[in-house]
Length: 298
Image (cartoon, helix red, strand yellow):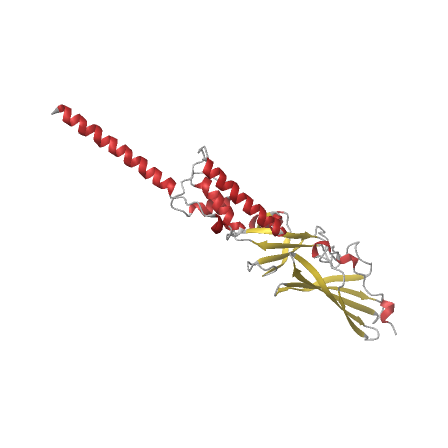
């Protein structure tokens, strides 16, 4: 009788151990290795998540908060900061294959190789340095139908009061990605939006910008030079720069120039169609000479 009880006792715990192992194995085996054809249909953002899921399944805690937040929404994810991640040969080959696909996509889409930024961290950086975002536009620049953002930041450090304070601006363009709050920094330039009361322009004139718009994958803005002479003398010139997105680049397509002489009330408008491609990344507003007031006299 005693022998029978011992046999039953051992059998019970032996079965329990097998059940525990099978539960753990089924949890691991629930990971699905996608076929090549399906992987090739995925975007670079999706491939990144699929590749990192191999590590997430083993409890890996990521340095990238967006990855941790994503996997935290999965019931199977059990983060373990002390986990020692060991990949099987199959898993290593799978990760390597996905990396190659990501590399090929990046090679064919140069924008994807640009650095990514966290928009909230970028915003806080400017706030901490007492700069402010003068203009914020949301729209679509490229062809992926993911919302993009344009900032014009006042980076002036001149604390003087009155109309002679130096005003300086930075243009920053962020392309949206499939990962929440992660953007590709397409452009950061201090030479697109004109400064005022600075050494880059002729003395005696006031400069400003206006009409900043992003619509139907077209970005445009206007700059104004205002010169006031004695009495009624003076003139203004407004340049409107129009950029179109083409083959991963913002290209200057045309410039509309409006002149007005306040002394003679003479007005003139010219539209210049750009024959030579000028990329927004290479654009320097200070290279665009304003009309000589003498041209509008008489």
